[in-house]
Amino acid sequence: MRVNYGGVHHDAPHFACDRRDAVQDRMACQSFGGTALEQRLSGILLEVVAPHGMEAALLALEDWEEQRARQERQWDLEVARAEEKEARARRKYEEVEPGHRLVARTLEQAWERTLQALEEARRARELRRTQIPPPLTDEEKRQLRLVSHRIEELWRDSETSWKDRKEIVRLLVHHVEAWVDHGARRLTFRVHWITGKVSEDHVLLRNAYSRAREVADSDLEMIYRMASEQTDRAIAMVLTKAGRRQPSGVLWNGRAVKSVREKHGWMKAAREEQYTSLTEAMRLLHVSQDKAYRLIREGKVKAEQPYPEARWHVERASLERWLKRKK
Image (cartoon, rainbow, N blue to C red):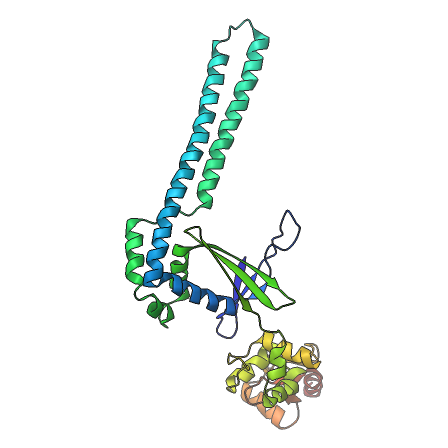
């Protein structure tokens, strides 16, 4: 599963996966916004790593390490049995008299089969080892006990980066499963801890169009006026510079503007062949920015700026007419 971060500050996670379940031919993981999921996972994690929860987790970890040691011994035993069979088949082949070609060929084939079985047993053991995280060292356990007394303070500290938080998660979590019930707008997830325990919970997903129904009238007016002339991203930048926010309190982004525009059936931004930016107009006219502004004020070049923070939208046809008059 991949995670991408969007929004103006690139802090809104979105998870996406296109891997299919080979057995049932269904989506093994799906795409969904991760803000609610991260918040709930943070709460569960803080409960686990609290001092009393950490001690319980470490006790469970000891049981898990004993179970892993038993599995390791079982895997080693399977390899040892395969080695014994290979050695026995090799001895039989080496002891056969050279004149007995048919017997020698049969024993050679049997030896080759045991060699193949031995190689498969060794590969299977290595694969199993890579699929299970290594046990924590005594020093790592000591550090976990120390940090458990201040974990919530450190986790919520603005100076703590997401990279640091991910390091904490990797110490405790083996992997997370998640799937979406689109009908109920619910995301269910399971946390597989390194102790072998599993925690299951769910969060409700926000309706994709709820923002459009709750947007302030003044914001709707700005989006409506700019929808046919500005890109969704440019509109979001104008709203942000004007101090506007979405109903949820987060800053506007192109995706949010698009959902509002599509909800109300407003047309997309104007086509590039009809309009251009002020920078491109300056290049075509071979003039400075001050000269370009003067041409716009005098009406010699048609352009609009819906709001002071919005970019200028210059009509290409008026540029062509001005260039023809100059010639």
